[in-house]
Length: 225
Ligand code: DC
Image 1 (cartoon, protein in one colour):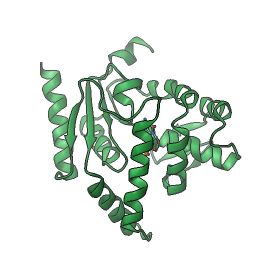
Image 2: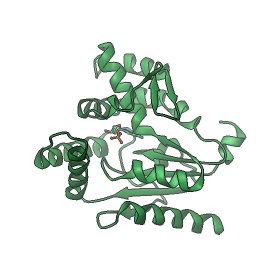
Image 3: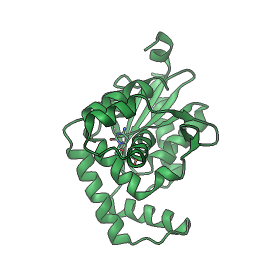
Image 4: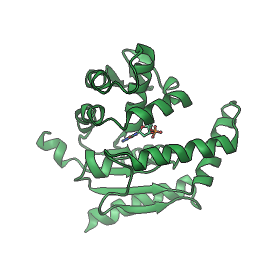
């Protein structure tokens, strides 16, 4: 890591699936004029590349090699994999489920570390995921753990899917979300948990604007001291 990267301020936002951390991170980054790293998208891109390339989801060495040479580009318009815009393709539920499985593999996680840390540059970075504050950026300026009840997260996901014109069943979504929570928090490597010193924000009864405002308040309070 270069000196400049170590100095760039960083807000790490971790939390369970559908907690709204992606939207919140994007909005916080926009408010501060910083870049945004959606680390879950990297795991999803690996999963998509593995599914397409016929690499088994338990082939740890094969997946780590794939992740280490992932042809990713964070373009203005979206996320590119080998020159193809995969912004939509990686949101598929099957890709999300495969991402959750391969994310349990230590060699694959290690292979993605450099790519993530390289995103830390002035004027600053807002990084969201599961292990931003615990593993990838343990020296983050501010660490946020954003959560919400499983029921309200399932309802939010349900609303999003219906708005996009997909059919969705609330009970199925809740079960899938609970299974994913269980996998993400029980895995041996980089399990989902609040980092030491993280500020926990429960957004069950907060809307996006209120949540963004809370994160910005925590950051401004921290840098004033
Ligand atoms: O946030 P998401 O749903 O896009 O993430 C997809 C999967 O990737 C999720 O099941 C957990 C995993 N993930 C992870 O293990 N570590 C991260 N920093 C980000 C995502």
